[in-house]
Length: 218
Image (cartoon, rainbow, N blue to C red; front, side):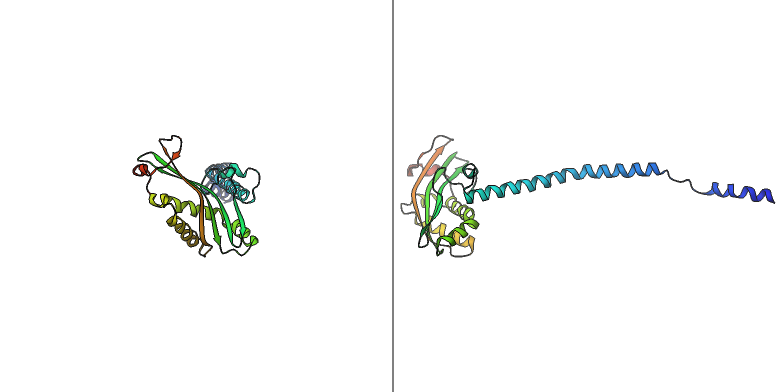
């Protein structure tokens, strides 16, 4: 009977399932973590780069408003650019403002003709003083420029060759006020207006009415 009691514990231990080795479990966890890290690394880098690009874009935008270093290089390309060396916006008194210089290009991919419209824009606004205009310009200067350039690109060739440019002026006032949601512009004056054309990337020459059939449409 005592012999039976001595062998019972050995029999019970053999019936238990084998234990997992802890080293194997930890290696599997580390491997899984490394795979997840490798998969997430491109997303993290993309997020960091996107944040840096947005911060850099904001710095350039603020530099254009304040006229800081590098303003000309940043403003010469892209929508809303102004001609190098030309005056920008300014308050002229009694609600009248200079809205800057514009050079707008329109390309016809079929005829390979590019039209370029150069002009200076002045306007009568709802601003009651220089401080009010400066506050407005700090927030909406670039936005207003974009709307003006969209108005030019949306104009027919007849509108651009009209001696008085009445339709273009009304279009600028209507589009800017509609985009802002308030009657900021009461009227505009277009000065030093010039229309040029370039064929197959040649030098720009003055546009003539005879070239209307080759010019880009709206």
